[in-house]
Length: 328
Image 1 (cartoon, rainbow, N blue to C red):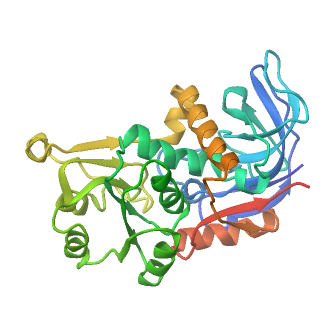
Image 2 (cartoon, rainbow, N blue to C red):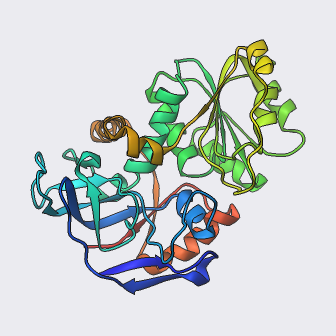
């Protein structure tokens, strides 16, 4: 079968489409013929060889797919060969066939297209969990999202109105991406520069932000603390820059503002509490089936187009969510 293979730490020069051995499912697992696969920044972090990500090469990326069940492993129930599903594999999803845990393989409701569904198991499910579980979103909250122009940022903009509504503020790494964030649904979008704290204060009438979703490691944590409203929740869910992570603020500073700093990891949840992740996937699929959730995606024609898209994501040039067509 064909798969995208990352051969060594680096960039697109080390990503190749190759023929690899076909996979078979073991007990409790499912083999899936991949129709579409979602691209995520975690693929870029693996490609770079960031600490705590890829340690062995070659590496097969890809952590969210849609497709049809090809084969069931021993003990799998509730699924059948030919079922339309989405899944969150631990990797190797950018391939014609992938194996995933049955607990993280969810049937598609009628009316949900495979193309859009490929954005659900990691991107949309993460966004739902960031808001509801980690961030304890309540209607009326002011929510700030760093890297608002990416897939998670676009998903949050779609989900907040469905969860009761609130004020949305986005930050972007490049000023020219602010307009796209506004189009996606943000009330305000600002470049991350020295004027940002004052811009956020003005946008919140000086009150501050209730919920901050931050994929930048600790690089923006001082900013988060500076614009946080009393009782705010700060959710750190990545380290997009790949740099060293600083210490968290001292307890006294958090107590003084009644602030919460929380960590979130899709990978950690998939390993330790897969049922919670599966529930989030089902909830998002139901929103798509009901027609309340619309998430535009950019379709790549084949696996050969993925390395250039990863380049755009790493350079901050990408906007929105990429999915790649893999199978028929």
